[in-house]
Image (cartoon, rainbow, N blue to C red):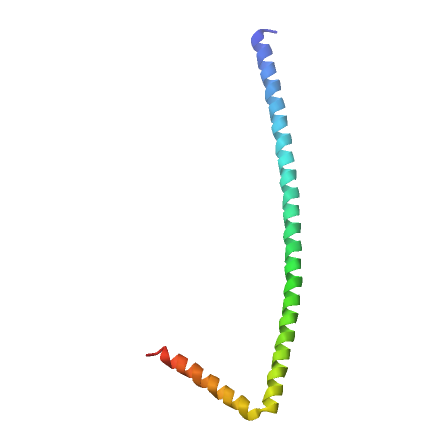
Length: 104
């Protein structure tokens, strides 16, 4: 076997080894990306679940506070209907003046 043949054989072997190494690296990279995507998806899902739970708690608290405010208003209107009517008229007049003042 001549030096040229030997060099060609060694070059083919090196090219084959490089191709195999590149394929192994590509496979490893794909596996790593898949694992990272699964991890990211799991983290996003857990974050969304936590946000849902917190928003439910906030909504429940807000609902309770609105019910309490409504009871307070209804009780005060029942106790003092004239005062409540006067306050409502006063608020209406102030809002009307504010809205009318913006048109001038």
